[in-house]
Image (cartoon, rainbow, N blue to C red; front, side, top):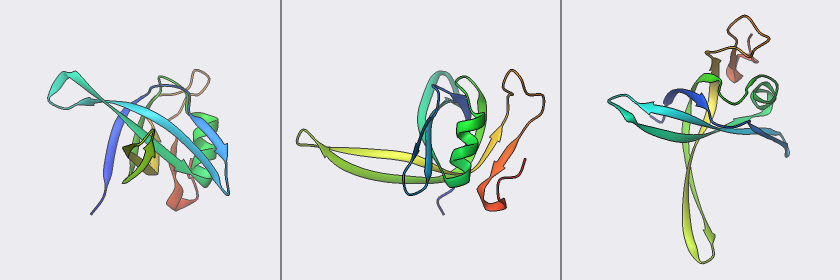
Amino acid sequence: MNVVCLTGNVVREPEFRELSTAVAEFTLACAHPFSKEKTSFIKVVAWAKAAEIVRDYVIKGQRVGVTGYIVTGDYESEGKKIFTTKVNADKIEFLSKKPDESNKKEANINDDIAF
Protein backbone atom coordinates (compact mmCIF):
# COMPACT_ATOMS: atom_id res chain seq x y z
CA MET A 1 0.00 0.00 0.00
CA ASN A 2 1.34 3.44 -0.94
CA VAL A 3 -0.15 6.00 1.48
CA VAL A 4 1.54 9.10 2.90
CA CYS A 5 0.34 11.50 5.62
CA LEU A 6 2.36 14.69 6.10
CA THR A 7 2.03 17.79 8.24
CA GLY A 8 4.24 20.76 7.61
CA ASN A 9 4.66 24.38 6.57
CA VAL A 10 4.59 25.55 2.96
CA VAL A 11 8.11 26.68 2.05
CA ARG A 12 7.27 29.09 -0.82
CA GLU A 13 4.24 30.22 -2.77
CA PRO A 14 2.75 27.31 -4.78
CA GLU A 15 3.42 27.12 -8.51
CA PHE A 16 0.27 26.78 -10.61
CA ARG A 17 -0.03 25.96 -14.30
CA GLU A 18 -2.62 24.76 -16.76
CA LEU A 19 -1.68 21.70 -18.80
CA SER A 20 -4.39 19.38 -20.04
CA THR A 21 -5.60 19.84 -16.46
CA ALA A 22 -4.65 22.25 -13.68
CA VAL A 23 -1.52 21.42 -11.67
CA ALA A 24 -0.21 23.03 -8.49
CA GLU A 25 3.09 22.19 -6.84
CA PHE A 26 4.44 23.24 -3.47
CA THR A 27 7.05 22.10 -0.98
CA LEU A 28 6.34 21.18 2.63
CA ALA A 29 8.92 21.48 5.40
CA CYS A 30 8.20 18.54 7.69
CA ALA A 31 9.93 18.08 11.05
CA HIS A 32 11.25 14.64 11.89
CA PRO A 33 9.29 13.06 14.76
CA PHE A 34 12.34 12.13 16.86
CA SER A 35 14.76 14.97 16.10
CA LYS A 36 14.11 18.70 16.35
CA GLU A 37 17.24 19.41 14.29
CA LYS A 38 16.10 17.52 11.17
CA THR A 39 13.62 18.75 8.57
CA SER A 40 12.56 17.07 5.32
CA PHE A 41 11.46 19.10 2.33
CA ILE A 42 8.78 17.18 0.44
CA LYS A 43 7.41 18.17 -2.97
CA VAL A 44 3.62 17.91 -3.21
CA VAL A 45 1.53 17.93 -6.40
CA ALA A 46 -2.22 18.62 -6.60
CA TRP A 47 -4.26 18.09 -9.76
CA ALA A 48 -7.48 19.43 -11.30
CA LYS A 49 -9.88 21.03 -8.79
CA ALA A 50 -7.49 20.43 -5.89
CA ALA A 51 -4.83 22.43 -7.80
CA GLU A 52 -7.23 25.34 -8.13
CA ILE A 53 -7.92 25.18 -4.37
CA VAL A 54 -4.16 25.25 -3.70
CA ARG A 55 -3.80 28.24 -6.04
CA ASP A 56 -6.57 30.14 -4.25
CA TYR A 57 -5.93 29.23 -0.60
CA VAL A 58 -2.38 28.02 0.08
CA ILE A 59 0.31 30.58 0.92
CA LYS A 60 3.92 30.50 2.03
CA GLY A 61 4.28 29.70 5.73
CA GLN A 62 0.85 28.13 6.06
CA ARG A 63 0.59 24.85 7.97
CA VAL A 64 -1.14 22.09 6.02
CA GLY A 65 -1.77 18.38 6.30
CA VAL A 66 -1.50 16.28 3.15
CA THR A 67 -2.65 12.74 2.51
CA GLY A 68 -1.67 11.12 -0.76
CA TYR A 69 0.72 8.68 -2.36
CA ILE A 70 4.38 8.66 -3.40
CA VAL A 71 5.32 8.95 -7.06
CA THR A 72 8.92 8.37 -8.14
CA GLY A 73 10.55 9.10 -11.46
CA ASP A 74 13.82 9.89 -13.15
CA TYR A 75 15.27 11.94 -15.98
CA GLU A 76 18.67 12.76 -17.46
CA SER A 77 20.39 16.10 -17.01
CA GLU A 78 23.86 16.81 -18.37
CA GLY A 79 24.45 13.07 -18.75
CA LYS A 80 23.50 12.27 -15.16
CA LYS A 81 20.41 10.38 -14.08
CA ILE A 82 18.30 12.40 -11.61
CA PHE A 83 15.78 10.60 -9.41
CA THR A 84 12.65 12.38 -8.17
CA THR A 85 10.16 11.72 -5.39
CA LYS A 86 6.89 13.62 -5.00
CA VAL A 87 3.61 13.16 -3.18
CA ASN A 88 0.40 13.32 -5.22
CA ALA A 89 -2.17 14.86 -2.88
CA ASP A 90 -5.55 13.18 -2.43
CA LYS A 91 -6.52 15.35 0.54
CA ILE A 92 -5.24 18.70 1.77
CA GLU A 93 -6.26 20.04 5.16
CA PHE A 94 -5.57 23.65 6.06
CA LEU A 95 -4.29 23.69 9.64
CA SER A 96 -3.57 27.41 9.84
CA LYS A 97 -5.57 30.18 8.30
CA LYS A 98 -4.72 32.87 5.80
CA PRO A 99 -4.72 36.29 7.46
CA ASP A 100 -8.24 37.12 6.24
CA GLU A 101 -9.88 33.76 6.99
CA SER A 102 -11.34 32.53 10.25
CA ASN A 103 -12.11 28.83 9.78
CA LYS A 104 -10.28 25.64 8.88
CA LYS A 105 -10.90 24.41 5.35
CA GLU A 106 -10.44 20.94 3.91
CA ALA A 107 -10.02 19.92 0.30
CA ASN A 108 -10.66 16.29 -0.59
CA ILE A 109 -10.54 15.64 -4.33
CA ASN A 110 -12.44 12.38 -3.87
CA ASP A 111 -15.43 14.32 -2.50
CA ASP A 112 -15.56 17.16 -5.07
CA ILE A 113 -13.54 19.48 -2.83
CA ALA A 114 -15.52 19.97 0.35
CA PHE A 115 -15.17 23.14 2.39
